[in-house]
Length: 508
Ligand code: NAD
Image 1 (spheres, helix red, strand yellow):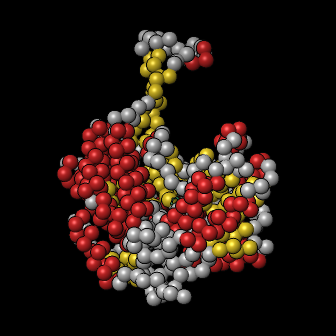
Image 2 (spheres, helix red, strand yellow):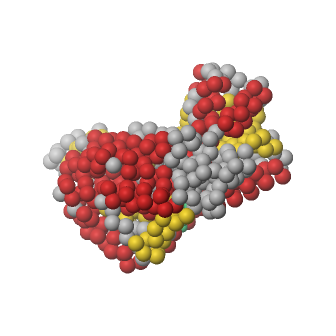
Image 3 (cartoon, protein in one colour):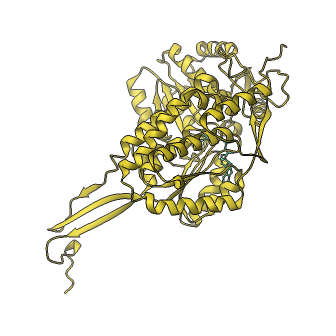
């Protein structure tokens, strides 16, 4: 078997340094934590980590700054986000390159992630003039009842490796226009892109006269995240990552009556109905499974195909998987880059072994692609056929692995779709309007995101993003998700000149 040709780590290091220089990042070199590239699996730079002292200082400064930032008019708060969006536009290529270097995304997807940062900045600037409340009819004459939304406090952001920049910008741009300040603990696997994002936001603050203390970056692992989780001054912990992480974060924040917004794992399914346009289905499914090498929370993991079309669809699907170019994410023709580390490759192998022991049949993929880089992990996306759910099918394996199941009735397909602990994204491919409506209805998919004739992955910033059950229940990004970053104040004004109690109560 021929071995993949990969760039040299020294060249990748030089590219990273050049991007960081252009953005204005001075690399905080040290030996607390290592920035690594999944392209070769090797270290790029040793970095200083943030310990307990830095975390304490960051939360203190964020809290102090909040006390003034909350009084800055919201449209003025939008100025810093507008400038940030402009800087992201100017450094689009640098940010995308860092995402490819550190998260291993192919170029098109890395650029897509940067575009999402720009889109959410635009959205948040508009939102800064629309943080509206309500006037509600009172039952008492001469009374006015209103709801007003006020800034909440310090928002602690904990983020995952797979959207190292976009998820932070969803949270940060909205939090800032809402009048909150931010302390960010990114994934320990993507510190360089975090330094770049933080520098651009700091530059935007300098140039627009916003206080430097509106945003703080902590480079560290789980312990740094835990310090944020336990700090009473952090009013909202917005945590994106595995369900394992959420299982720890949720109860800890609740124990101090803090607020949490959890964006956790998915186990997303798509139903292929007999009337589906199979050409459309095929391209949507291949991207949803293999895009980002299967490392999206919305990646498609289960395909539930009607028995009448499975024999036509499956050979086309496996052939499409076999044609997918796997390799260096910087190469123009690559569609599947590396896994973040060897750990998900191991998890994928174990999942395939478990499902085949339980009667599943591996149809294609699953083999590691040979390279000279020992610590890099490139894998061929895999398809496994299995009758019904086995324990491993109900788990999230964060790698490009698709289980194909069959069904006879729509009711059965929806029951299968919903029969997992996670509830993030679901799709149906159908030309039957009635089926589509049922799938989107109260008796349909129980996920936060429900799609018709498109794959499970991909999201627009205008929508609220998130899912139910073990996905955590949080909603970030568009629609009314900004409410999570503010506190609601309900006010009643009596201008009648008399005391009138509600429910006609007489107290004299
Ligand atoms: P992870 O859970 O290993 O780490 C995520 C972040 O949580 C990191 O910053 C990590 O340091 C921190 N962390 C881990 N344990 C913690 C703890 N006990 N207390 C505080 N912080 C802690 O996840 P990952 O491997 O980086 O990302 C992959 C996972 O994230 C997948 O499960 C994926 O589905 C999920 N994800 C979900 C969404 C969503 O919006 N629902 C988006 C992206 C990723």
